[in-house]
Image (cartoon, rainbow, N blue to C red; front, side):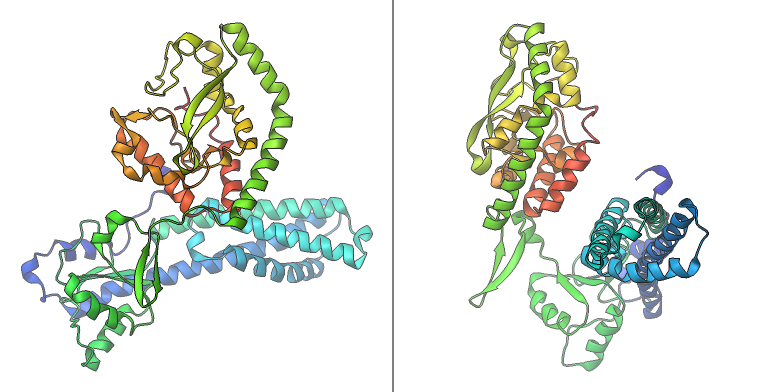
Length: 485
């Protein structure tokens, strides 16, 4: 987010500061009407978010109508408002249904420019495919100008994209980075330093855990009315009572259990009368693995054919500049924490290459050749890893494989965080989520490794083919990076 998009202070900032700065000795002295006024400001957040969701629908509808009208003008016709409205009336319902599937009009998507454009773009492509399919089935394609249709499609993409960029910026300015009405109730536990603007003390709000008193049940229902979510912080001995109380309300409810944080569970399951924590998803399911393998082999095969001449030129340049092989082979940690041999174009002098990865490459490292420096800056040294993909050792997208001797702050990666081993539940990749987020280059500090690790674990836990495609597209934007040396 750049400076022009920085979130403005929320209207609730002043009362939040006053409330949180009050000493604990004053608990119970807060005016209930003041708390209700504060909660009404949270409810307004939810209303505003829905308004932005409707704004997305209106923006897409206007963009479609304007594109049809401008397409008529560009083709040399006068604007026929009746025809433009009829075309939009036929196509927009199809687009709207497709958008429901991609969540293109979800208010939560409105604040993220990239997600907003991506989800709308997918829905638009589906609509376009259905439109052309209908023309083919109806056998009226010959009577429709391809130039006019092409111009209309281009205008629709342009107007739709511009509209969503404007809405996303307005959204962030109006609601900030956390546009959700989350009510956080603290019952006999200290307020968290990271509390949000929806944090209240149960005693201040007049809440008492007693389902035998209808007025207490009604009080809880009044407090959570209009919220997106209610989160309770309480001591272990009160969790059972709170769980019974929260099941009485019509809002998504959660109870915080700090002791589970270190376990980092992915999900919770209920089976055989007992609750269990899901700590790992294991390998991809067979249909996911099959889909990813087919995708990898197809992309790697096509990429190899397209880049073969370039790889020959690079190999020749590496050989001519310094003695030694054109390829550099090194052991890396792969799927299931098993080792494999990775291939790269050699970028260092052969007699000074580090096959164990114990010495990280520095900026202006005198071991790197002139050709090697260019290859590293452009990421072209990674091209031979297409062979690793075709050999089934790597994927196009996945966590980047590291050498066993890699370090940060003089510590081996798994000594910094033992969850490091968890990232190898999927094949390593030529590119990955960490790379498109800018986490690449030398791992000097612990934070360098931790940022990569969190991104890798997120990728492994949420794999999808669509996500792989998105990462590949975004990789082209970070091929040249300040940390590539």
